[in-house]
Length: 224
Image (cartoon, rainbow, N blue to C red; front, side, top):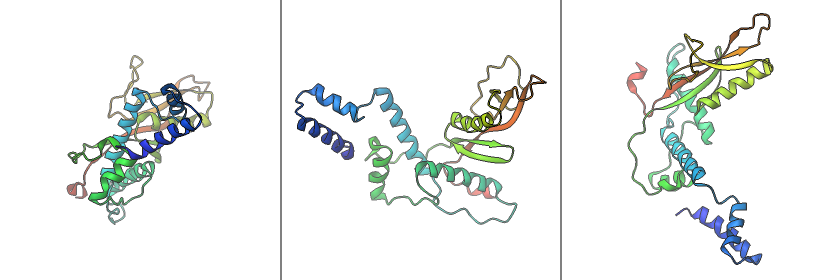
């Protein structure tokens, strides 16, 4: 039982009774006004987000980034940097201190996935993909969805040229009859039409969205 949610509902119903409401419809209206009622679609989406948050928390690094010599461990630093961004979204910091076993169900499920309380531990989660928004060598951030990474890049481009027409294209060879839909592992670059009116062509902007697979567990061989 989600004690927190039940208490919130109880308080709304009590307030309705104080106002003199005595029908189920009256209580339902007040609960809806307090945003304690959600559609099945919204509830399903919330459950999916809660499950994703719980999985990400379980995957956060629990040790500091190892000290490496200059020029070494570039991939390790890049991966750790991606996890720093994920931790910021979840409202925690790295290295992540996992709750004690007896507290994990109470803390994680209460915050992120109440429906998972008291269930047995799940097997190791598969690797997840995050999306890096960048321009040339400048990284803007890492996002859980391709759409969010695209939006970050587009905002910058719209400030540079607010009248240009923008379009995302898969990195590499592109044809006019392409449907424009990227594959799950495709890197995309933002193209602009109208950047140079005299040429009237689609021009690459240098804004790129790159999918990056984030491992679910430490791989000792990756350091070698």
